[in-house]
Image (cartoon, rainbow, N blue to C red; front, side, top):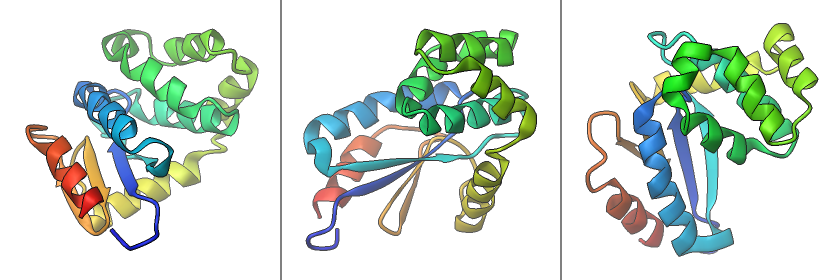
Length: 162
């Protein structure tokens, strides 16, 4: 970690990924350990095999624009299996449960206002070697949790403290 800088973790995620749901426990542990000093940035990496991943990323970006990004991400990941069956209907339901302007979320899914952010994340992810989710980037270290998340929390903590 660079002296005097805030610890930074990029969390490359796909909102239709059950492994990303499991990874939230590690993010919670990191936030508990580092508190407000830790900056976790969500980066989108929707996979083609999941048909609702891209709309979920678009809805998440709208939720961030409305100040409820992380609660939205956590709520959608908690219902991954339901997202598979219900798609955008579930996204709007979650938005409503969180008190978001559901009309704006629905419009964001239609007008594509957040597509550039998601496309840029996906292109950058591919450029740095992200192949699946969850993946973490700490400093210049990329840690792939797509195959196994065993030991990742410890490795991320060591990088942040190092």
